[in-house]
Image (cartoon, rainbow, N blue to C red):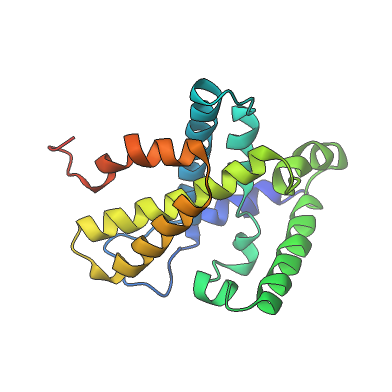
Length: 190
């Protein structure tokens, strides 16, 4: 009996932003889907407008699995996760142990095939793009909460936008300059 997919399906039960008052809850599974869409978009932008060679399918697949360890650990809030280097390093180690545990819940052949998505190389551009898409998804969440009148996300929005611009990725800046405005609008305004 292999339980990988049964456990992964519980990502829909993990709520994000646990320390923030929210107008709408967001599950880990919907976050993964959004990051996959954004990673694919960033890859397309890179390839079409900036001469890149991003494997957009790989980026999307990495994004789908990028937070799978949180199905066991839960979503550790950013202020805690990045409080200091020791905590961050310890949390990365925990994530690695959990990822291996999850992969051991698959038949060996399947585990070997899916491992590059669950534990990608941090050096590959697709992984870096997923990290940027993850931050972009956080910024979009902030914009949506602000549009709903939730001032709880004001400072997070400013810090996240600053961090996104600081990445220096042409594709991220292109997305921010050309697509982000719509995320704060109502359906009728779109």
